[in-house]
Amino acid sequence: MYVVSLHYDLRPLAEVDAQVEAHRVWLDRRYAAGDFLASGPKVPRTGGVILVRAMPRERLDALLADDPFARAGVARHEVIEFVASKQHPAVAATGLFDATG
Image (cartoon, rainbow, N blue to C red; front, side):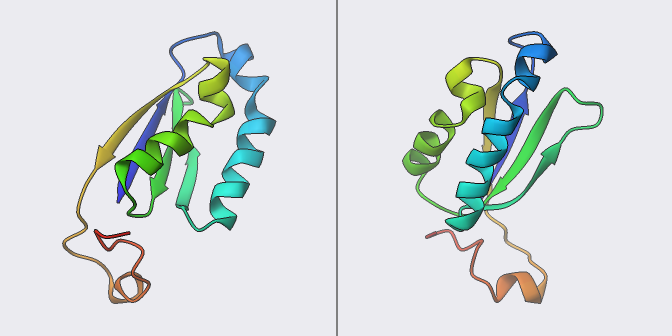
């Protein structure tokens, strides 16, 4: 699984805000496809976080390249991959964190 940390340090926040609606539509598509598990802004609002189910890294990179924030050059993505070696039983039953994705 992955933790994706978005950083709004490339452009002024007003330029980020101009892309928020398109970014949310993109997020909705990824949720509908079952790729994303949770997302939201950082506090303070210096970026955001997306929790992503296990999948091949190349697929994640392609998804992130399609993010309107990335396409507009207003945010950068930092990807942290990890193996969830311990999980709540309800989460483990979903298989979303399986390393095979």
